[in-house]
Image 1: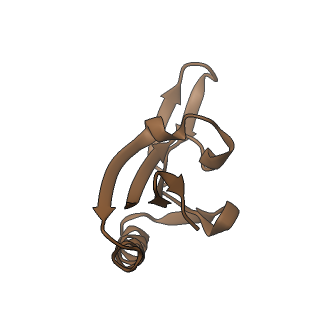
Image 2: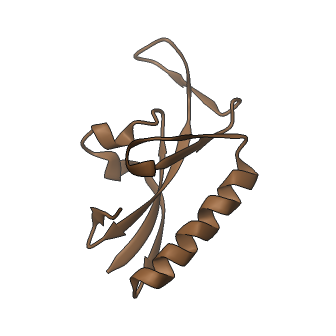
Length: 96
């Protein structure tokens, strides 16, 4: 099965940490790879219009953000940036 999930996290290097699946805010399911890739491209284009900035990371993953979208971190005692990243999955594994 093919999926796209959107991760909301307070770090853009989400792929470096275990448990990133806990940060999934949206999930789309597809019967095949073609449908998934089409929707992924559509989401990327929509997110480029919605968010003011983005960073490309490992494997060309894109983390979108708005500079004013901050949340307070009790552990670090400061406001931290919130990032949104769409990710393609095949059988619940990251699909490149």
